[in-house]
Image (cartoon, rainbow, N blue to C red; front, side, top):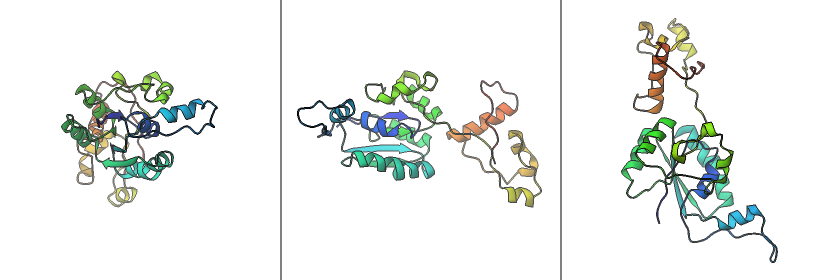
Length: 226
């Protein structure tokens, strides 16, 4: 059975994507229309859907993994109980590296990753194109949220900002961060934790510090958040 790898950037469209984005299976849901009467469009679509026995989804851990397993997977299995869903957690750079390593024998059906890593994977030919024929909800995606070569779909945004421990700031008599440049001040040395620059969030922090130092930019900075 050939695995398909779809790159989706949010959980919002995941349930529909799981149904349409995978290969064949041994059985398909049956229409519930009474004998002798035509099934409605929804029932007909369900009857024609071909599902694999198992689907492997890779994405971030923590709250994203919890949302997938506790909400989305449960709702999907209520409708399609015979499909086994497996979630592989990790950061986007690790996930893309796994997909690349498995390119000749894919083990992951779908990824939920950040835009930068999705684009890197697209350039390396890792993602299969998706269409409205596969995922009808694609017609509801605004043009400015569509991904190059139909290699995925954007359905959420993650804010980038500075969080701080108000008790530590008070105890050490530090200033509340008001600029990305405040992170480079000598008095905060030893009190800062940043994501590794190899990850999407680590690179984003470096980009925001570059913006704060008058680097050219196309969009406004995300607001600082407490």
